[in-house]
Every structure is written in structure tokens, then in C-alpha cells.
Length: 302
Image 1 (cartoon, one colour):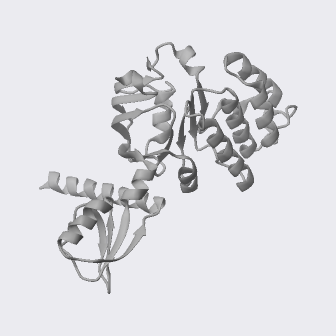
Image 2 (image 1 turned 135 degrees about the vertical axis):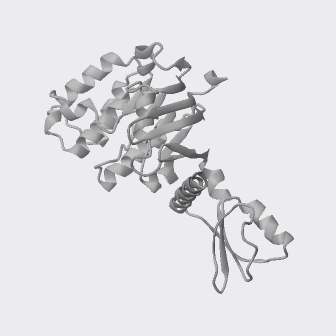
Image 3 (image 1 turned 90 degrees about the vertical axis):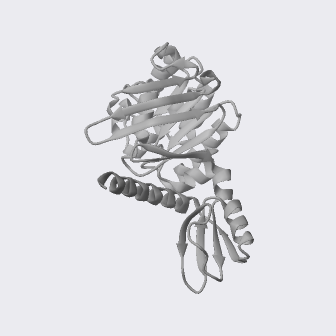
């Protein structure tokens, strides 16, 4: 049932002159942190804009917090905290305190206590005019406002952009604390692998508008492995994504168990095993997608 999920997207597509997102199938259960990763232009911001009903999909259906997109729009958005890539805060003319007061009127779950705590941690002077803040300080403000709403769903589009390392760690701590209840859902678009490693329960990998992978992070890290063997093996082992011949043959696999079983059945001993780092996994996924696109284009041209 779609309503069992915080977010459900079915057959969703959005097309522009030089870019297409989808068709997209995605179901996100409540109480998880999902990291959306991929190069610039992969569709992360476009997807978030559709979830917030800023842009409309050309095709398909989206349900958000149990409601069809656009249904009870104001009531649904009061349950969502959103830090966009660019927000109205960039042009806000009031003081920090006035912007916070404005937010508190619109969001019934607003926590004055949480706002006070966040404004202290992120060094937000309530009397400072927002327009005088640096880009990094405006990101701190946008993040603090969204979290102080105490929403059911928190959507963060590159929230750490412009933050220094100390404040970045503070932000990660706050996201982790926010999600720790198991009742709130967080979506975060990021280029920072360390944010994925520290925060994510699931990883959604977007590339050129396509959702290449959606999987539990720990499962992904457990399944990807590098194996070294002494002799050459037949190419195309189950799960294999790359091999490199040398004194030892190095094999990269997306499914360690099936590859290891195939090697064992062939009587080939594994000399060494190594985990594959998250950024390397994403690199291999992207490269495999490019290869598939080229191969598909070659077949169409035959």
C-alpha cells in the first residue's frame, strides 16, 4: 500500500530540453535517513522540487505523508522541514529573530526550546539582519529553522554548503539526534561521502536522471568486495564489475557471496579480501551506467 510509506513515487517523469528525470519508482518507509547521491545534474534537486510541489511531474504519481501530491498542500507542508539549494532566506529583509517568529506561526510543531538551542550552537544572533549574513550563516539559519519546526519529514538539499568543519560536525550531530527517535524521516542530497557514511540508513544513487540503486547502506557495504586470486579466471563471474590482471588478479564484485561461491566451485583460492569504500562503490555504479548507455546506443545503431 502506498500509504504505508512516507514517500511513494510511481512512474514519475519530468522532462526538460536537455534533461529527463525518470521514470522513477521509489518507496521510502518512515523513520529512516536516505542519502541521495550523484554528480551535479543527476536530478536530486529536481526530485526534491517535485516532492515539495514546486514543479509538477509530467507523468506518474507521487504520494507524500499519505497524501497525493498537491492534496491538502498547506497542511502537508506544515509537516515538512525543507532546506532547498536556494531559499527565500537569501533575500529576507528582516532580522534573524523576526524570521524565526514568522516560522513559528506557520508550523504548529515549532519548538521554541529547540530554536534557542540551535541558534546558540550555530551562533545566530537574533538581532542580526538576515541580508548581512554570509552564505554559510544563511545555511545555518535555514537548517536551524527547518529542524526547529520538528517536522515528520526533513528534506535537506546540500545543507552543509559553505559550512566550516566545526559547524559541519555540529550539523551532523543535530541530524543524527533529530532522526534517532525512529519516527522522523530525513532525505539529504549530498556530495559528501562522509555525510552518507555517518548518517544514512539507505543510499539512493541518481545518475543522469535515473535511479540506479536504492539499498540499505550497510547491506551495500557488506556485499561489495575486492578479491585477489593467484590465477586468471574466466571473465564474467557472478557479481563481477571489474577485474585487473597482474601478479595477482584483482576482482571487484557487487555480490561477494555469489562471486566467492563461484571461485570456490572453480577451485580458485582467494588470497586477499578487502572492503570497497563507499565513494568507490558509487564510482563503479556510475561507470557501469555509462557502459550500459554506450552499449545500448551501439545496439540501436546496428
